[in-house]
Length: 395
Image (cartoon, rainbow, N blue to C red; front, side, top):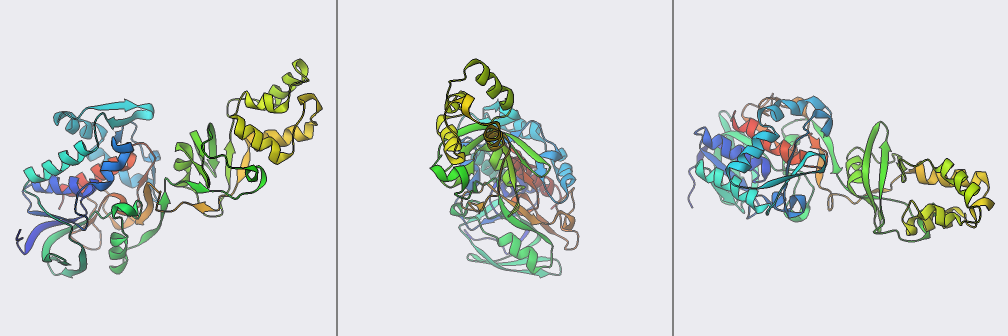
């Protein structure tokens, strides 16, 4: 296909934010070209929510987003909120269900959402140039000139929707970050977010692998607190509660974990001593924790025998290990398994209403490339829809 040399708008990145932006700009009569180095659009959408696409969350609030400037996201979220996305899905006949915490998932495949967005682009006369890596980008007096594998293109408005570094196997790159730096824009240092953390093989963890053991837990890091499932892995910790707190965790920081919330262990052991003094400590503990975890804790702490025979000081040590476990992760599993990239283009560089760069007219940054990172549960896709929509009304 032969493309015209000049476009009103070029959107770089055919993910959630880019597809939304391109279709909205096209609806407004703008001549739009959507470019991506990958051969198919919506790669991350297709794998989101276990293949069922966690499209949004009913409980949108700035507290659900991590950013150096948390209120920045609200302007875009108000322009295109969760109900707006749900209406579009309903109009397209895509069935969704609400799950715990206000999360919405497609009952069918996530590919339905990709198809909806692509069809919206085609209806709006958006042209696609897929499998087309972009190299050099130059600023012109009245727009931008892009050199790509398919040839040069120019545009009046350029939208960067190239995402972050998470899921490199799906083609993730730092292209947008590099462009921002080259043009003198500030970045909040990018890090893996919603990512499993690695733990040292020390203390009671050294007693053997707990991979596959799961508990309901409360995790704290500084002033941040998350409750929910916690999963032990071969290398450390994962599970929804851990993934949530990982976006906030900084290298060298200490996590405090309650592996048995809602249970007063002091009274529990006093009652066991009074009523069942011959009962084994491991039996008391396995009534409330998975056996493998209980055994690892007791063996690692050197505690065993009957509950009446265990000294108070040893029981206090056990209670602390269970309900105020303090651990410093050695790192994260990195972008390979991270669901998102935290950090990115500093929101102070952008208009909250339009996502246009304040110092470079006609340049927009949307989606994951921006320093706005949602919690687990549909928040990141909603930011993609909302930021793409907001930019699409302006370009």
